[in-house]
Length: 255
Image (cartoon, rainbow, N blue to C red; front, side, top):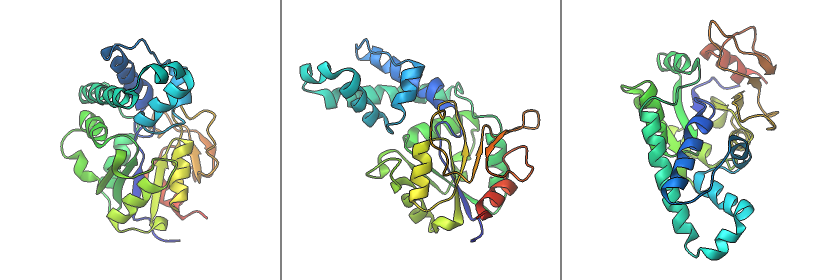
């Protein structure tokens, strides 16, 4: 097994519970802004998350839940683009205000890896602007420079579960899949990383229930802190109570 050279992070759900407290709030605000009476509940949003990408998710929602709207609105694609524009602006405002915290333990791990010789990248379906707002809003300073690549949004043709975003990150960092470890929270994320040949460590999020996460080498419920250790759901954490770089290396080297 190759040495672990880089850790590639998903963002939404993995680094922060952004879905319910960021993206869902921002989307419902966007509906009101464009004059629609649509409203996504937390439960409905959990179902819709099986479709990755805001544009794609909205298209799926209209097709399944608002089919009559497609027939009465010939400019649906333009409307969806406008909704997504407002949604992203809303999310940026919320995140920059520090109202979407990182999950407990995330900043500790990011700083540990930053201080080591292991490299970091991001592979996510959310937009680069959303990534920037979340990280700067929580850590500030030069945090974006900690990551060699921020592979995000529409930078690739197909979003997760397609492997494109991970393949792009590997190419930009000049790395082989077996030299990396992906950190994910969802079924689509696991499928994406595995399709790119990258082993996966999964930290469940509040929207991971019902997902098939069996492809993960290690599955835990939290990042873990000294006061609140993580629970191992499957795999071997080698006695660790928290996610650490040492544990990531052990997970990566496991067969």
